[in-house]
Length: 309
Image (cartoon, rainbow, N blue to C red):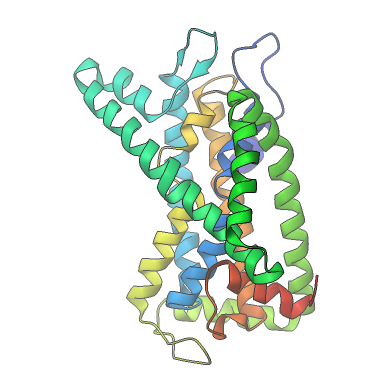
């Protein structure tokens, strides 16, 4: 029911409201940071480090993450402000300051500083750029520095246009990217359809029992499945990180609850749907035992089923 409600709320901005972006574009902007690296490299790394059982704990993290995303978006809309250009701005730094009071302004400043360093440079740009460069180099022998230069130019062209251009590009690119990826993953699963029941069996079995060493997989204990499943689950949907509510705060929406439901849908799409397709493709194809990790493991799984494609 919440998922259906969220879909009905994302359709468009409020008529006559030019301060913000559409709820759909806000959702796509927040998903742009997660659909890709988190779903392709994050899931593969979790399976490489701890076995198929990590996928179960990623699902459990997503259920909690949906509630977290809801709370983040509600607070972002409730305590957002209108800047000097007439645009809606918000996020954790605003609801810390406006929700907790002026005495907590120092904490809002700390969040803004550390988010800029951690999200903007560390786990955001660096991880994504590295995953893209690694995949292109492994599959097409494109030098990493060439990928880096191209990324700088493309990202710069989008960022210089502000939230309007970012949301516009994300609103077109992310749906295409997600649908194309799910379609390719579906082909992989259809080719390995007889192995899907066994893949689910491995996920549920190894979530509670140790994974034995096999092929290039070294084996892992249950605690590793929980640890890496939860860690990569949070990484894949960014629930609680604070980046998503910055995008949702710019939405032209009926109210905090409406955008909170839309934000919940982001976690569902990201971890429950897209991550599951990646995990099943890796496990059902048998690629998870070959010793690869990250984006290279996901690429290998797809290549086993669709060689050369």
